Image (cartoon, rainbow, N blue to C red; front, top):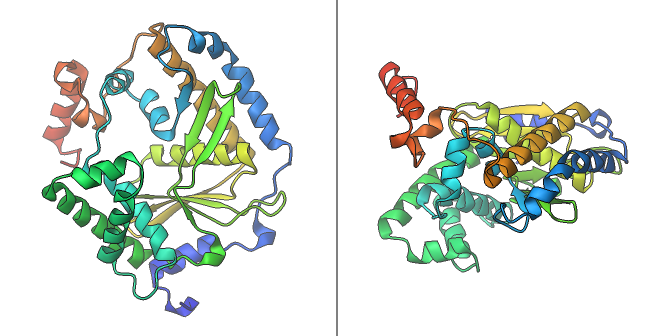
Length: 319
């Protein structure tokens, strides 16, 4: 596709992501070790409680989801930890979507959203993963709901996002991992999409997350966490972007050392809260919000019930 064939939404993405090398930031080669030293020093007090019998696990595992949970409503965080994980169409949709995007890069012929989604479901169903078991045993109504929701999102992606070229080095859900204190503390993430790569100490990678709905500060924090993981692995990315599929809009943020330090402080705060809550040395606080709608303890939570009653009455929540 030539530049003059891009629609306005696609051209906005191409313009934003296509910065020439001379406009890309350069980071000190020693930054990755500086960040690691800073994290390990601040997280060292957690070694003893993690190794104690009060902590239920061999290590502390932090993902973007776990961080957002523990830094949100702490009572909900503890309640969710006691609930076994279960796949659903809503949860599986993101995984199927990412596989469909991956297939679209190398797909021959017209990219039909539903064909890509069906191929993605087939591929995941044959994979040796828990989602494969879910896709093989889910009901026809669940499968139909999953296909419908993912096809709609995939249609929006193909309409609004430029076709991914292999020269851009696209990667979907590529794992990033950092192990601290010999693996006692693990930071892990899988960005929706990454493009580009570093060139020496010149940043070249762009990390993109796809969302529906409106902007949330949590979306930006998720990407900053990914940026920190990339910085610990090799070199920071140059740009972070959240693409809102149903709006056809992209929100971006340039990566700086201050941003990475802010992300590391958030990890430190989340890790301390997680361990203190898990070991019972911290009383959980309640922070009402939209997530009260699916909190398992909401019926017994006065603050959550009051919040939901008020949100329903003034129409401030999307029901």
